[in-house]
Length: 163
Image (cartoon, rainbow, N blue to C red; front, side, top):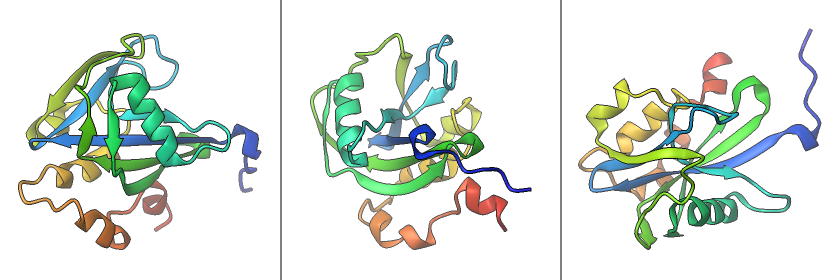
């Protein structure tokens, strides 16, 4: 028997960013008392408010969490949330205004930049981040290629389970 679909009011939609600079990605260590993903490294972002686009939510969240204004967020993937409770739009951000600083220490107890070789050993909020983040940190990565090659991107977790 197939699981019943959740009502739209119970579906979570979120937007998150892979902030890349100098061959490194910025991640936040979620506080151990957080309801979702406690004590793991995560990308930055949050839930969409009613009527808000993913891009607008991302801009708002990064201003609230990191005190930056982003330019040209580029869509990378849509990852399903565990249990089919919604999805998260993942974006690439390589340009922003302002100095990154942790404005939400109750949410992210630490923020840090990581090189690609450091990522496989980190406890990540979602293991599906790894195949998306590593190519973004490659020395010859072309950010415009993310738009051109979206159709040939690695499968999402949901797609892997339907093979």
